[in-house]
Length: 351
Image (cartoon, rainbow, N blue to C red; front, side):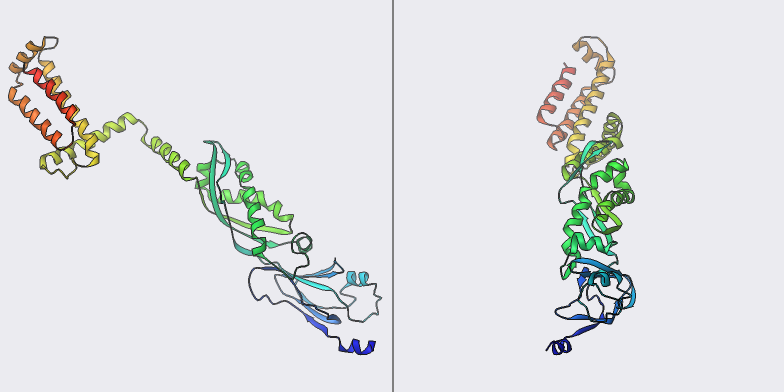
């Protein structure tokens, strides 16, 4: 009866793994109740490693190549099974294959802003995302720490853990680089390199090698980005006083052209024209006031009016100025209060 059972057993003659899809890191060869034929064939392809596990203990590891399974090629397994050199019976052992090729285009990114110390801003919260690639470097360690006795272990199942390792080392990477945020944003290659160096030891503890890290984007949250934009803008402007003078000088010709055309929908009627128009009214009023005062400095108001008339400032000119100011009020360039103030000032010159 024992002989019939032995004859009925199915023996495994060829052990190999042809990967049918991407993303599989570890795969257990289907054994069921079958046994491996002594003298059978083991084929390990490039970018693969095969590992024999007997009664929960790692026995032998095979790199790429074709092997004939005998007591000579399985010395450790032979020792565990207490074989002698002439033992030729089939044997049972779990066989695991591991993919050692690079697992590329793995995504990492900050779901929430990460706070880091910065030379320029003291502390900032930044967002970042990119890609990374890794491979299995130590199948024994990966088996013991990660995949275990599962039939199949994939990159998707490991994704959350590895992404967490990337994120927890961002602060260390920035600190180690000593590079301010503004320089990091301009030199993403250096940031990615620092992140890889900071994270690689954590990968190694899982039997993995972090081959590459890329940075696609690094930015600040929207509220902080607005503050940074304002600071950059102020730095570009430099002398704010000169900048305002330049803006006013640039707006006057356009406002004058708009006023001359009589088109309320032109530049004068725009939102920009309102602020610049006020400045224009002030300039005109100041020039007229300086001209009137220059005629008789220090004289009483009545004497100044008489001197102004004799020095060439005519009542017709004052009235013409009032008419222009009235047009500017009608078009919204001057407010009613501004117009009334200028009107009272000019009329005093005629008393």
